[in-house]
Length: 253
Image (cartoon, rainbow, N blue to C red; front, side, top):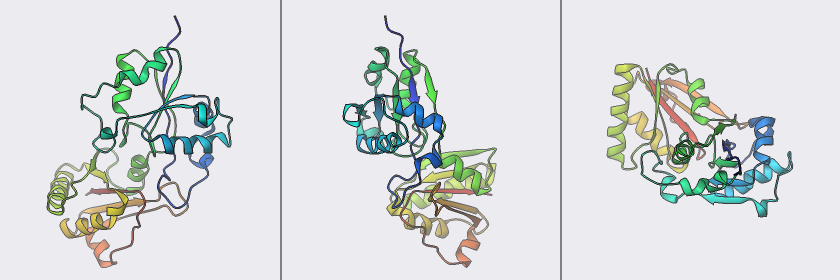
């Protein structure tokens, strides 16, 4: 009987959907690149972006199998935005190669899989099957944004996406603000990049002037920027163009 394989959580660069890319060796350590290059079986959010990432890795470390021979299986589409914690999806079949003795990589489109990205159901299934789960070192936009924000790094929460409807979004923002001001717990959230401007407008319209607002954009890229200031200071300086790239928003006291 073969020894079971392991599930490797492989971070991807944060430049997915960006106009420019950072050298992959600037954001992923050599040990992570080497471990990823040694894998031939993958569970991924998107096969196309995983192949693109593997191509970049292969330019530095020879891949264990050519791109055309890599075994890639995508997660169900309905897990991508809704998240897959407690959804009841049975993804154990995706881990059959590990039961057959192959190491498997789990990769999302950007950052650490299963953190603000799909994959938690796969990790839970791996534990249920007795497989070893190995997280590799790499960038997480949430932790980078949190560290750069000046908000409460001892007590914070990530709440994912906010409602798209303007009225519901404003209500949710005020609920999160009240929680942050009452408890001191910083609240982090993200938005689809093309709605960044609408999110910023809602934040400046709906939050109290003294509430601290932090926004990080372009993390790990040459134009990376984090600004953290009270809402009234954001208003006084004029509404900035935060662009249509990935952003992390945070509020606190």
